[in-house]
Length: 197
Length: 152
Image (cartoon, one colour):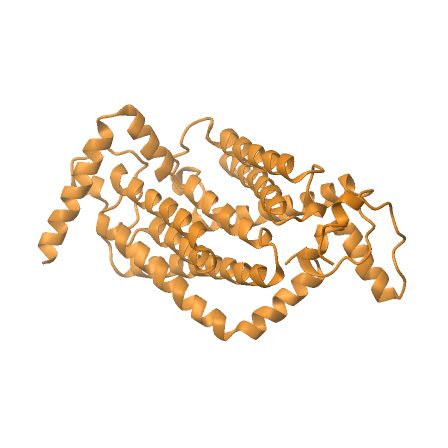
């Protein structure tokens, strides 16, 4: 089972990487999306917009709670990835396979994919308040993860594991936030007094 | 010390955050936060700011730099984004308060962000302070076309 999964991992990375390598345009697009800056900034901007855009105070409270959940979920998901990275090391695909590297050479563990945990952590938080925005954010997070796989710096199972961590940790944090609702209302009440929430 | 890519990243986040605040304020009908008088031009300005930020940052290329070679690690990115978004918010609150200072009465401003539908940020804060001190802020000229259709 594990060997079959590893073979599938290698085959998918090799196929995607070869496909991207055939076209200069696709290669450039993959490098652009896979980078450290575009996807996380866009996802963060969605969260920022959620803070201000709702048109009534009840909806705004729901969106602001989701925005806080998204940011905290992302942070804790990143922390979980760091802990797992410290316990186990999986070499990056470009180290083990013959691939066209479309990224710089990361030296940390491939499993689980940090970018997927961060991306899906934020996207899950967004989806808790707004399904359409959540789908957009999830598509962005998925594109980021697929681009990392295509670039030859992560296996598909790394991306899936990272995404699962992002979703689960953010949902867990959401449950905590529901339990801490009076505290959150108190904090946001102060922000409302300052006209910031 | 902020590196070259750090400065560019800060500017990307600052411009795009200002842009998103304009788009969100236009969508949420927070007229007191707009930098232009009408919602659609403000949203267009916001989109332009977002595009300008990304264009500025990615003009040199995809910026594939490891954090061990001068790039930003995750913590730095989060910190810079928070700082630049905070700066963008502060600049937006000040600029919109200046631009719209003659537009609203500054009275009956409500609470939270909803207050910024019919007051600027500085008017809302001044109203709060005046309420605390037991006096009302002096009325200014009211833009009746804007304020008459807004919820109380």
